[in-house]
Length: 257
Image (cartoon, rainbow, N blue to C red; front, side):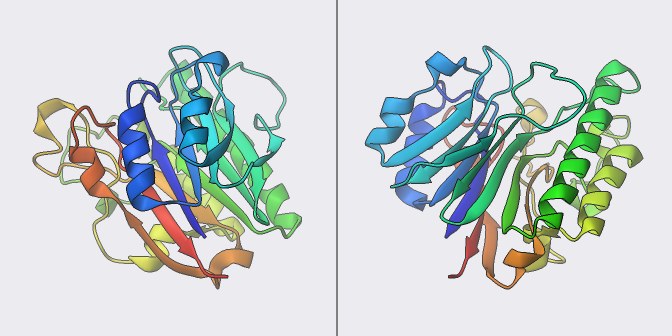
């Protein structure tokens, strides 16, 4: 079972890129972020022709998340994170696919920091931590996949001081990510590539793709029930070099059984 996460950065603008990658990579499940499209603008018909059923939560011009399943219909279980408020931002969706509970999440960027946007980021991550603990307590095989907008460790970003004040690398953001791992979630990329430099995002500015000046922002966290099934994990980084590509590349895992 091949599960991928891909911040598509505008699903209709990048639809041809997405369809080409789906044909080549043949993932069984795809978690998409930054649809930047209202519900009615989601390209359901084109994806169905490509062999994928879908559930999604859109938002015009901003955010938006979806889960695609090859030759299957994802069973929607949740369209938002539980919590004390509904902020109206389409950042989380959850569905069951072939016996695995899969979440597609798009955490807030949080810039500029300090300030209300950073406070919102930390509050959102706190809601995720609480919900993740509930999923673990239910002992269901689960994957939390998406753009976390967190650089977990220093070797997850190219050598630079330009991000020192960025919300992506702040200690509070990294601590929230570590708290998820402390619950028992497994960072699939680090499980398979413990010491390698792995990037998933290259900003459009300052020739960062050409210089391989990247960051690792997109993560697939596995519940302990899936750890023994993890056979491989990697990044389809060449997709970032395609014409009019997203600034993210797809990240994927392969589960045996």
